[in-house]
Every structure is written in C-alpha cells, then in structure tokens.
Length: 158
Image (cartoon, rainbow, N blue to C red; front, side):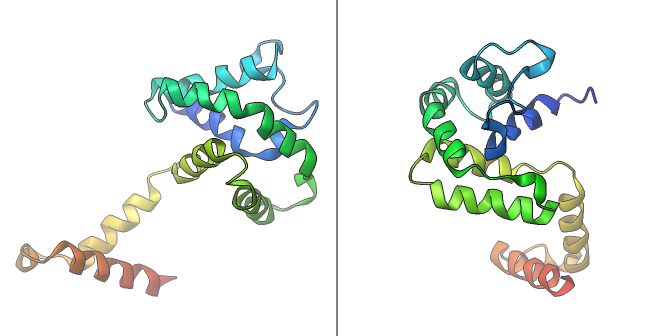
C-alpha cells in the first residue's frame, strides 16, 4: 500500500459524485481529522500537482469550482451503494456527461483521472499485438498502417 502512485489514485476518488455527500468519505483525509471540504480537497489534489498531472493554477481553479460541484452532487443524490461495479462506473460516466458544461474544470479533471491506467496490462497487450504484426521487413511501414493493423487485431480479439 505504500506505492508512490497511491496519493494520485486517492485524488481520483474526487471524481466520484458520491464522495461529496454529507458525512461521506471526504471527511478525514489521510487519517487527519476533517477540517473543511476545501482544505481536504486541496490535500488530495496536491500529489497531482507534484506529479505534474495538473498545475497549481488548475488546482486553484478546481477549488473555485468546488462548491458548485458539491451542490450538483448533493442535488443529484446518487446512491451508488445499490449498484454493482459495472453500473457504478456507468453512473459516474453518465454524471460527467450530463454535467460537463456546468462544471467544466472538474469534467476535465475527471476525464484525466479516467485515463489513468492502474496497471501495465493494457500496455503489455499492445506490445503483444505489435509483436504479432511487426517483423524485420516492416521497419519502413507507415505509422498509420501499423496503428490500423493493431486496432483491427485488438478489436477482433474482443
């Protein structure tokens, strides 16, 4: 659990609307007693600045939009405890698609978090497919041909 990326993944919890409901998981970040939502969110987002996923200006802008984000979460009052994992992910995606214009900075942050890959398995799959299609004689192939072939093989497997 002491992995250096753990604080980054903890920050990604902010993209779950259920996180902001009263008496939920935002209280007492990092084993510290709760202070305020704004302070706790800054504590969670700081590793994203340190790891250069966002800059300090983005952090400040997210904090400015935070109250509006929380109000939307409370307004929607989505109860994820009744959903299985797949439906939970779909509900989060739907939430962000519905609110991307109301809280655009948080939408961008959520999109960034959704792109983070928790393991190298997907990268290893791509290299496996590339190993199938590339050989010594294809060194001069155009990148778009290689990309298209890779996509066709990958999609065929699904």
